[in-house]
Length: 272
Ligand SMILES: C[S@@+](CC[C@H](N)C(=O)[O-])C[C@H]1O[C@@H](n2cnc3c(N)ncnc32)[C@H](O)[C@@H]1O
Image (cartoon, helix red, strand yellow):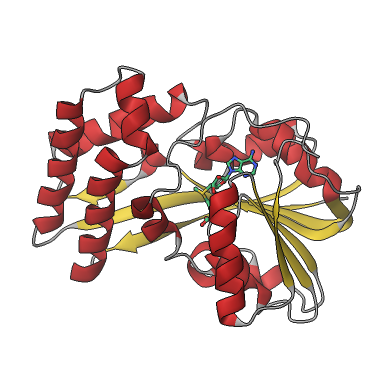
């Protein structure tokens, strides 16, 4: 039974154009900072697991352990469960729940992880407190969040700058923080965590097929996902503005030397 629920609106929603991005993610490309800490028999909770590609992949690092993927979006959980079945991964459960009030006893997990979730919530410190509560003493709270203000790309253009400005406005209107990556250590301190190790890492897209995928999904997301609906409903953009942003993304994707880097902040917190 979930009693405190999320009051921020999840900016992206689970449109196919969004999930094309999320299902690319693996333990290696999105949780490399955590992998050295994993032991085969650990119990791990992945909060805001989305379509579960990272979650299912992580199961192979803890073959005698157990993973729980938790989500407050019911539809995407069906996709995550189907993926686990397709891959024959049995030491995993996907459950409906809200990160603000986890339905677990204190000290229930060795590792409590979230990836690209705290940037979309109203109260990241509260969620980190919950993550800390359900982590064992000696266990780990691990978070990785992108930082839109620190994304860099080539070639630059006014249109791409407009996309980032609009993204910042829409996400903050929804109650989130698009530059979360640089704030994780400060939020963790506020949540009472003391042993905080910071790192950063990037996704980098430069090959023709990567650029086509990244620019194509952002062009589509801009007009077809919840991002576009919110932008219009909140009067942050007109449909013409959105269509201009989508065109900008497609044009950028046609550039011979297009290059994009997505910076992430990461924290590993040991609970004492
Ligand atoms: C950007 S997606 C990340 C999905 C996955 N972790 C990944 O990196 O592929 C964020 C996910 O967090 C979920 N979410 C947002 N707020 C949540 C909350 N308060 N409790 C549980 N899940 C939440 C959303 O439904 C969404 O699926």
